Structure formats: structure tokens, C-alpha cells
Length: 81
Image 1 (cartoon, rainbow, N blue to C red):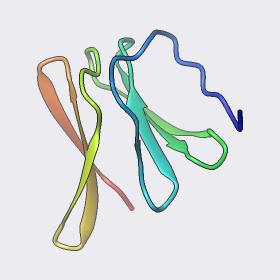
Image 2: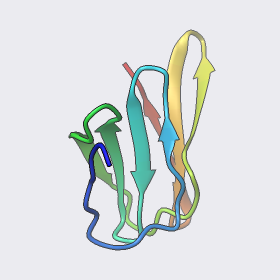
Image 3: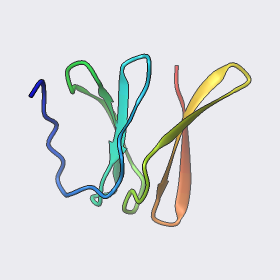
Image 4: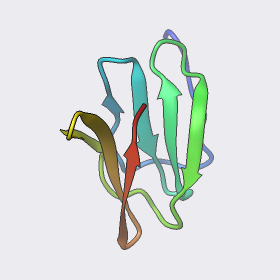
């Protein structure tokens, strides 16, 4: 095993990695996480107010990359730098 990231609860959501070594996931505890895929370091977490219920997805629009995730009864979209 290369690294491990401990979450406070189990996850039903999938994991998404990007070519720029970002890893995204979330769990039942109501946070959406961005990690460095190379070492598992937490880059940021965002409280989404409900269980993350699906795997995140990424898309590009107007030359900018975004990551989207569903949690609770909402969709959250984050712009990536």
C-alpha cells in the first residue's frame, strides 16, 4: 500500500482521479475531499451538508476544468485551478 486516508465514516461514493494528480471522494459524514493522488495529503475538504451519494465527475467548459458531486439533495460544482 502506498498511502491511506482515514475518513470518519464509510463511503458509498466512488473515487475520481485526474491527470494532474488530484483525487476526489466523499462519504456519509458529509464532506467532499480533494487529495494529492501521489501521497494522499488532504488538499481541502468541503462540508456538503449530506451524504455524498455518487462518484464525482469532471468536465471542461470554456477552457476551465470543473469537478461535480451529488450530496444530499444538491449538486456541488468546484472550479479547478
